[in-house]
Image 1 (cartoon, rainbow, N blue to C red):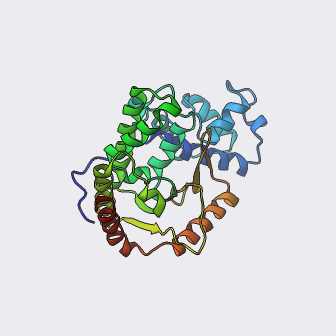
Image 2 (cartoon, rainbow, N blue to C red; image 1 turned 120 degrees about the horizontal axis):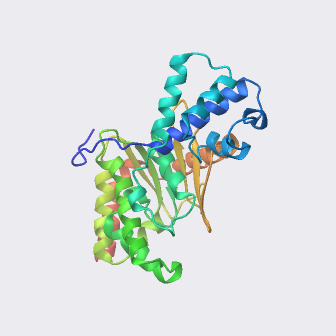
Image 3 (tube, rainbow, N blue to C red; image 1 turned 120 degrees about the vertical axis):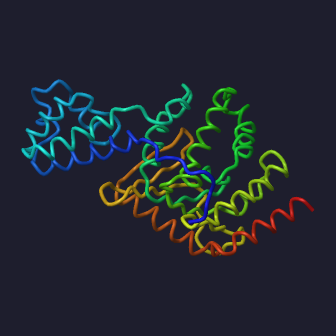
Length: 297
């Protein structure tokens, strides 16, 4: 692997552990043939809470409640029980991004950050801007400043959002446990000047630098494409063998996440079609050099 700078330790991932614990509890309950309603009978929490626990939206803070559920599901192996209790303890800790949160953050953003942190591989497509995990700090700030009058965002929100984006990017460029990234960028998104020419030149250089990393693939979809084209961005998050793959979509009201197999299959086919339409990754450095020449001429 090419060096991307100083290595940083892997971050704790409580949300990822919540998702893992919830997935395991749902499987155990279904294997036992117990409904959500029957599972919570006589316990101190509701059917709705258990459903949120199973989907990773909420943690189960009380180890006693977890033990009661496991007994109800027929789990009598003490080692297995202790493993799940330890998973529950980890899931209850504070997430690494908490210092970057603000009141105006999208309600679905924390869950996305947790899923992204758990991902072993990410495939992402963006038709309107440089993918966040590839952005420079100046490009990210310029994007927020352009949108500030429309979004009525505060200076604090912009500062924390940019800092958060750079922290997310760390896992691609400086982590001891880097996530595999395959990004497809649409040519018009690269031609759109966010800020000024100097910011864009720096951004092209940054994409070129990151694309050289062994675990990163960057393709460019040319504007003259004759094949499949999507006008919406999306991200496929591969969480490994134990958890279902998840798709993240941006909407006008924020973002959504789904692990429904039908949707995952559809967006997987979309990404594969876009990849076939895009230029090979080997062509990315020269393409970006040509863009640099064009904007500076």
